[in-house]
Picture 1: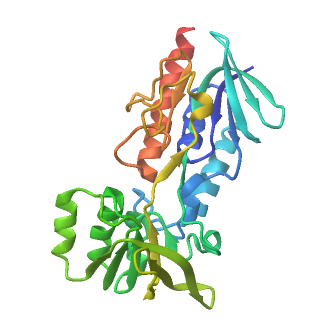
Picture 2 (picture 1 turned 90 degrees about the horizontal axis):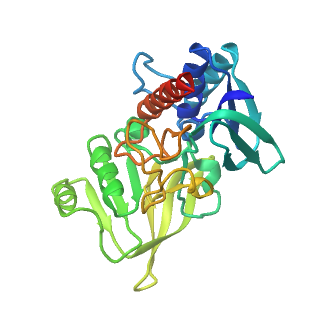
Length: 304
């Protein structure tokens, strides 16, 4: 029996494994896609303390190497549920795996909602981004577009307007839905324009790099081409926590309804990372959650 099974191999999950091992607890990380999570889409990370520059993949590989060197176990499987047996839990996977443990950390992460355009997946990290804080500097002095019209999209546009020559916000709905204060702040930026009631038709590339987007007015059907070197998509996040709703309460958006303590209503079950309700989702906050959840799990195990 493993002390702690960690569901998810992103920064939060791997940090949790690191803290577990350094505190003498056995740890198994189960990841369904690839270790590193969303950060692997960032070609250059320059806002992680103590490391001036690295790629998201480099960070993920080093963290994976670090937890393996500490003795963490890993499995590439898809977790479908966790059975609560009181002082023990059983983690079930799609592949038929059954892993008994004394505590579980759910670090399931989220996936970004995308536009569903042809060629979109191949351009993620190569012209398409989901984080202006992470990637905005790469487009300094260039034209970019922002997809979306809610608070997240408008905040992205404000950040980008400080670096980019032109920022075009493209909203599918007839009006922007972000806060009035954010809309007013954008209106004061001479290098920002907002197009509403527009849908994306296709991505334009040149030599394999994004060079523009084609959009269409929902009202008139008229199309136009918007040149841009970068497209920042802010059309929502999709947590995938439903399989664990009986163990950890979800908020109306589907995130685990837990604060920085990373505790849930089920003894021995903890949550960490972007899948948790929070105001800021960054690499640093994911790592912080991983350490908090692991230390909480260790305290729980030491009391058994």
